[in-house]
Image 1 (cartoon, protein in one colour):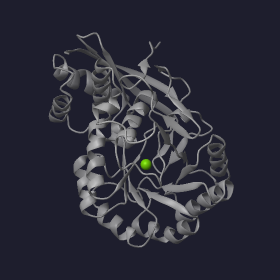
Image 2: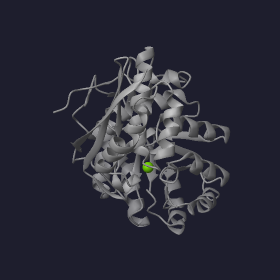
Image 3: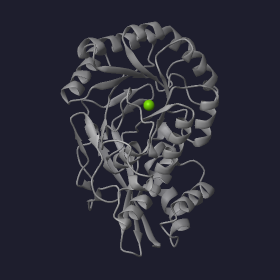
Image 4: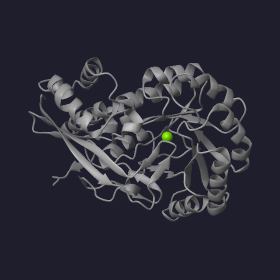
Length: 366
Ligand SMILES: [Mg+2]
């Protein structure tokens, strides 16, 4: 099944302004993504999405288009789509990093291959380990306590059982925001925090007692990424019973290995875009499993195609966290589906699409 064409097209969506995320990295108001179609000589197509955000991975809509059109596509056209691991190795050999661009192509290749076999992509990873509905947590921006509480109540009304609150904007303001959320949702709702690297070690340590008192169930990415943070994260872990999760610190399998060696976290945040594809996410999950760690599906506000890719991974891996819920939350922010059918999000969960491949077909876009 030869790859005959790889098409990349820009796709820009506005985010629902009433819940737009503000983190220590800034506002996310517009999603400037790239959609990928892989065509084969068997007549089967596959679809993928590059959920690019410059502040996150250094990739832009323009850079992802260029990477796919001028580097990845010319190297892959003519190859057998069924040789997925060879295609992944080729992409890694000819292009450094550019995780989200590579993931979009890998997604489309896996989609095409699974479609040609008449199976879901999850079957390429060995089958399902759990029911197809994955529990979500709302992401609440670093807003005033009143606005944070409002969004938390929106999440609760939408049927969710958990949220994470963006912190890293000064410990006093952070704790006031988390306290307002806790007050609004009551004691049984799960509340985590995500600093997006906005704290230093001393600030995180200063926040611990307050976070414990507020029943916080997870601290995500307390310190800035860059390689020097793993030992400090290990020190923080020894001072608290709250599980520590790393997200920005772990894109690659090498970074996952370093974090595991340093005892830097309890949970690794994985997702196909950040990891350079579903295969890499599954590989990191297996490494985490061997080290006794759990994985949570993180997010860059994926829309439907990349959300399906997250779900394919989520149902396949054995060590998906049950105590911390997942960030397959793009459906709350983006209103216009690009696929048929659209992604199903209801009762607080995102549901694995039925049907072969990613289970979603890209619509013709204007
Ligand atoms: Mg995060």
